[in-house]
Amino acid sequence: MPRMTVLLVESDAAESERLQGRLQWVRGVDFVVTARDTLAGALEALRAARFDVVMADLSLADSPGSETFRRLRDGAGETPIVALIDPHETALGLLAVEEGALSYLIKSRVDANTLARSAQRAVKNARIKFGEWDSPMFHLAQHQFLKAAQLMGLDENIRERLMWPQRTLVVAIPFRRDNYSEVETVFGYRVQHVLAMGPTKGGIRYHEDVDLGETTALAMWMTWKCALMRLPYGGAKGGVAIDPTTLSRAELQRLTRRYALEIAPIVGPDKDIPAPDMGTNEQVMAWFMDTYSQQLGYTVPGVVTGKPVSLGGSLGRREATGRGLVHVVRRAAHHLGMDLAGSTAVVQGYGNVGSNAARLLAESGVKVTAVSDVRTGVYNANGIDLAAIDRHLAEHATLEGFAGGDAVTNAELLELPCDILAPCAIQNQITAANAAKIRCRLLAEGANGPTTLEADEILVDRGILILPDVLANAGGVTVSYFEWVQNTQNRPWTLAEVNERMGEIMTNAFDRTLQRSLQSKLDMRTAAMVEGVERVANAMLLRGLWP
Ligand code: NAD
Image (cartoon, rainbow, N blue to C red; front, side):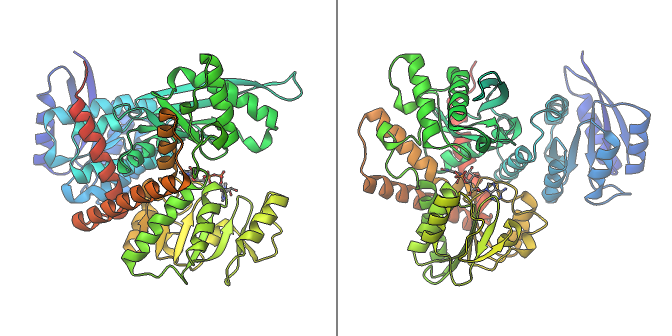
């Protein structure tokens, strides 16, 4: 019989005995439990012996608060920790998970089986944790999911499955530099989170920070996003760890073709359909589609979305994410009784999402007072002339040197006073460090994962309405879905058809999220997550587990 050593840390003697009793009754594993009732005792035990897993109450007689986990973790090294909490302590549990606990359990709800499985999973997951998965974005995605799962009482088996992607592919991509003799090898990824909903869908990112954890987080968010929008897809994401701005056009093409070839076995119009994300664009999608089609011997437009219109791309796809964001901003402003005409907006990131969002906000009468790119921000309290920005960018490819406003850093830009703040660049921009200084009424997340979990709570407490990424930036995947439908049916839609149907889907998703948020007293992000997770969980339960 396999043997597992457990350090159980619990100040309440009766509770400790009950938990030990439960572990003794588990069939198939011999749990050898060492029990301690104080943090000091636990740290001493950790110094004296090695354990497979630590299961610890975080409110101990000699350490009642959030410090318990940190001190235990420092003492436990790489030994996995499962936090044990009371029902009113979920915030403590989430904090522990954020800081490295592998999971948390509500003591009064665990039976012997759950306790045992949780200990075994912690050990298994610890092996994975200290590798490629260990990225802040993946932790954020897991915590957001755990929070929703806990609040909605999600089936434990489904919860454990959805914490991880169903399929991941890591590829080494050799591509020739322009000087011909130099071959560079970089890593590429394709992650499919849930295959139960239909084909999977998600963008391809080229960025030097891309890794398995980041790609997986983005794939998870795609699952919730597609489910929230009621699109017939599971989530996926891909990427290559390279800075595309350092590549010539020919190098970019060779890299893209080789990446497409490497991940071809798991993509296809009925399997998994990539799209552009940061660092990729319509041209990259065209090369991807061509490479895939060359392998099959005939043209397969539906293998990617976000293609040029002449190759089967959809009208309206390019500006869809920005347009979708403005749809939900309009709806949210109405809910807040805020008049868009005359309100102000600050947009971080002036790429595909940010530039279209800024333009469409301005067309709705909003004064856009600041925008930025990776190098700098520009602020003008009287409103930025966006047409002048576009001309400047066409000439210089950066906002640096733009004369129509004052230069600000990206960090300063986020703290400017405004009605609508739209982070449309990258993740982890609004954190515990600046959340108290954000001065907007509405936060519309164009980017994926721009707000950390801690910042989220600060913003919600301050009464800022958050339009979470899975809702606010879903216009892109919605029109990608339309593109796929048009490719499948070989019938292009008019721009009016595209925009009208997208507007309907965005508005409907916003209304459902708001309703759930008000009815169940949840913040908007959790409400959106619950709405998405519920749909996926129902589908999985209906399909059943095979074999
Ligand atoms: P993009 O490459 O077109 O534009 C990104 C913009 O952000 C550029 O202006 C860039 O200069 C700026 N930027 C990059 N790093 C930055 C940094 N460290 N600080 C400040 N600014 C920085 O990308 P995009 O397609 O507009 O995507 C932006 C975000 O929106 C990403 O998080 C992406 O995942 C998300 N998103 C995009 C789509 C889409 O359809 N393109 C859909 C959903 C979500």
